[in-house]
Image (cartoon, rainbow, N blue to C red; front, side, top):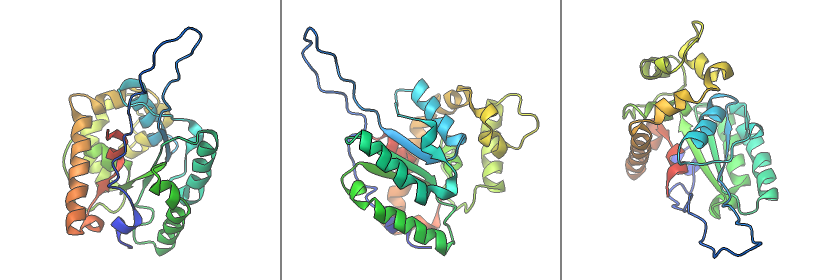
Length: 241
């Protein structure tokens, strides 16, 4: 696999993501302009879409989340540029976070080339801070796992290993699952459309712990050149001030 650090560029950028709007002196007949929320686009029609929607609805972290910004995980190299351009056409000052699973390209040269073409097509937008890439290796489920434990061992795919690790923590968050496996529960709109599972996932400091673990692990791995040899999540970048 091509070096993960080379594929994901400019991840050390520290822009202000949730800065408050400038204070304005109220004036009769002048309507206050609200700050533009960050946009999130992602693979995953249900898990990611409802996670970020519920996160925006129930925490201090607010995002612009619309169904058309989410879709098939494997098609992100082709679909993300279209969504990015559509957003920036209407909102030139927008900040866009691109969340995607990296297991689709792990060990697959054809998909690695697709990713390189995707990144090259938006390199100017990455450089100017309009677009921030937030990959997960292997998947968004690893980001969820960081809410409960700090594990960096390489997990190559979102399959049995991830299900075994995560289900003891989160299975109880869902009701009326009709015998579905945990990973199928996360992909089921019927199961994830209620916000309760995200509220429980974030409570008691778990979200803050996940942010800190993800950031520390990536910085340590980049310092030693070991990022390709472990699991990681750049989703923490969505929460950095």
